[in-house]
Image 1 (cartoon, rainbow, N blue to C red):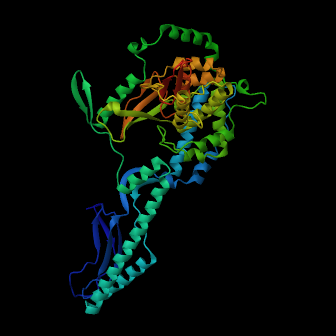
Image 2 (cartoon, rainbow, N blue to C red; image 1 turned 60 degrees about the horizontal axis):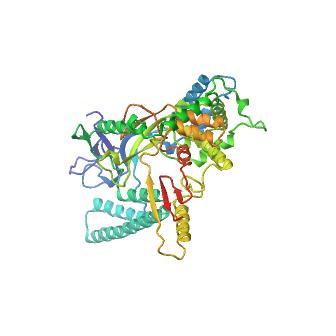
Length: 540
């Protein structure tokens, strides 16, 4: 019986006479009793024990869950205190092996501080309905009537009083429910400004949880197979991504061999500029004012601008970087400058956790109907955002991107594209309604997954981007790895031989440069968006 029965009360002796009647004087339950309960003494009655009045709510206040860290209750003062004692880092003149070791140590220090300052949660709480003052007062009155009933027995007057009080309690409870519902509707109305928040709130009210991946059907040597377990689904997705994130020999025949040869020759001529440095020399990246590319304010601004999304492989979310003490921000800034000087994008940032989400709203049994989303290291997101800001500034300074490019650009999008296109059509047609205009739309299949790394590097160099920035972006694309996670099951790590990681802030900007030299002939208007190009043929 050990650890199987819980004694709920009372904490005082209840036996008081030798008379005996059957009345409850204690509460026993199993260890699954998670309901809100209140036990009080009902006073001395005809029994030889003091009767207990037990009130049990139908709504559980504590629901068992898998032990996880309760990040909402992290002790941030303790977190900062543990990190403030760490020494300053100086790697100027050291080698890149020391740089990788310092990143590993910094990850370990932040993780240890997180674990020491964040409590473990084994229950999830469900808040009870918020009651009014009148509801609480009626509850006390009803309790007094129950006490009188147990002491003096039932009378007509007491029966009527109990019944009337119960009716008033029901009415007041309905008022509480109405107020709660109006508050929820107000939250829905507030969330309507953002599509994601709106549906999160709707799913919360309706009790819907995230849909799991259903059994997946696929063809194996002409026979239809079904992946049912998480491991089978993960293996299927992994094999699909391995094929998607590489350029096969069959696909390679579609490329112009002369273009491939020219790209390789051009990159070979730039080998010295693209080779990473073994020794870190910060003087090489200082500007005329002796300033380094990144400072502490850049780090803080970038952290603030990033969203608090899923943490990726490390489990470190945005709040654990927003609450870093100044000395760690300085160390992080120094490490990023060292990476830029050496042309190294740290290996710690290159492994992505991939989750598969349906391309449509409802999960499908077709594995091809899922889109891979990379969950990345948050520290890597900070560095990628810094590099992306630097690249966009150089694009704007060099006027690299065409005016026809509307995707992934500030203050542009499908709305500006369609407005521009409509204006051009109206101008070309003029008053002659018989003018025939045709439009061809082009959708690039697996655009992000098939991006050619060598072509990205070559086009960045042709666009006049600083060689040091091109060098670290080339390293950003090199030797990336990923693994697929389906529910709780994690797959084996595999190499990404082509493509840019979906979910990284730098990837859309790199994708822009690939289609930037799309031919633009005089009689053709080409309008490009993030995922497709619209080609409109106009009369000469």
